[in-house]
Image (cartoon, rainbow, N blue to C red; front, side):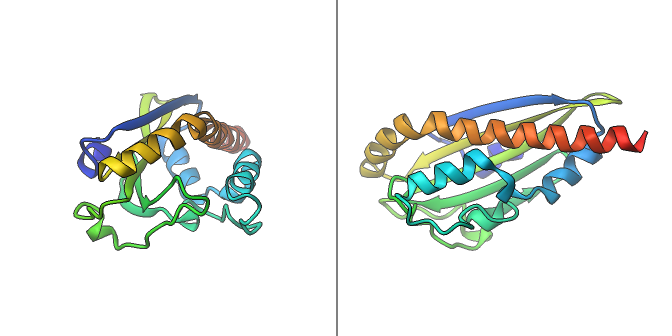
Length: 179
């Protein structure tokens, strides 16, 4: 998997998957067309997370609109990266070039990767999975992130489940109209 090449030695992970009755191509297209502003749970949680400081467009169109940088993109797997201090209200996201993601090692920060993997089950079905991995870059960031993750992880999972369900609904509706 490409995610393995993007981040190793991580301390935290979360995984979710869903079976979709559609072609791999349709799911891949849907991932690229996904409008993250349609995430109801995501918008509410981002507002709460930032204590109301977040602008209404905190979750923007596309995943890069919320700070992720593209690290890899194939028809089987898309990998996004993010560097920041996620335990802070604004996340203190660092804008870095994708080429610098691997070598970024500034103490006090954490690196995260988030993938979407499409696994073909048969000609009419795929499994779309998503995994998030986080690597803290020093003991202090590990301590802060551990506490943050304890609180945030269930809600982070809800956002990922919401994304998978929305993509499933959208792709299966489109596939049934095409038939």
